[in-house]
Length: 496
Image 1 (cartoon, rainbow, N blue to C red):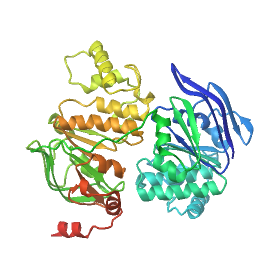
Image 2: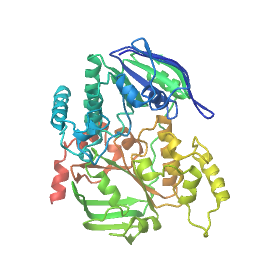
Image 3: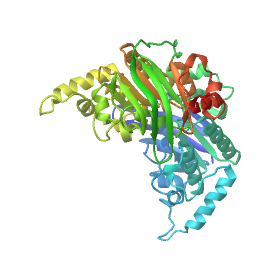
Image 4: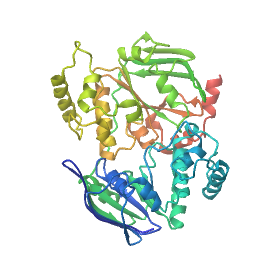
């Protein structure tokens, strides 16, 4: 299906989120949409998929002008959007997620739908069990579920918003194979990203947005330097690697064992130095989540000892860890990190130590203005957090951290962020390291792990390597360990 956008405008108050955008995407094309956080990519895609409406402009499908006032209108016209955070219901089965919102009467035929899922599985080489529950799936499998659901509903245009965020290298390879196959079938794929390497290997054409404007389009071979300049107006450098590690242990783990209903992690040992950064690598669900939560009291170890600043905190609650200088920033910003409906000012007030019985709104406003300025947050003290872009939500989370801190634990600190925002975030974190804070972070981005870690621990199916010197690792070696290869020496050590 050919998609054409003509002179699209959308304002949110003073922000011109879509400014006279005109774009034509032929059928069978994988169209890349590049731009930094807040460039207007998601706004434009939400207009096309019916989540919001443009103030003015036209949308044409196969040269016919259409009106899209809701996601239901969009899917009826053949447009489906795969969001960065999958819109599914984890407590329900896959087959039930397929049926949600589908006009199938009071008694839908589950057996028929399950058979449809199996046929789509076979077509794309997926292995999704219709009777499995969504909360048992990885992020990559949840993406597969949503792609199949949209195809089952009749989508001929698929919009994917930052789809490679939080998935493994093998899952990304599978996703790209699927998208190429769909394009060969005549489907139109719109691939929204800030990752130049993904666009380079996948897309037939790229459009770059900046501050709501279409800055230019490019056909392959793509000039990555030119694309970066279009996105940011300048060249971007990751900067030099440096370590702020000092003598003295912040966190010490001795023979740590922790488990949940699906996985057991055991025999983990670590001595984390002040100012040191340790990265956690592995496919999602390999043990990083258990490890990071055990380091801050969110999960109680079943064996072993956890010492923070020479205090034995084994079995203590997260509240006790916080009192002793540890904090945790989760990957799910809006579900666990921030409070929807509250403003930035209200967040900063809640994050500070309580002073007296009454809330000092004036002090909160001054604090919010100071933090917004210091962390370069694109928002105002009265902005509700859900109105911010992903990058600005992440900056807000960092701005909530108290000073001083001994231990900062993070899950995917730059997930969904553009290059400039990621560099900015790590600049702020490295400032903390210079102040003596130790950092443990989980990431699926191999380059991020190698660039910012002093040491790396790799997890695979409940096993872990000892901390490895990041300077001696390559992306290839890290990828092998993540995939389960080259574990013989570690397994021998752990069984000894």
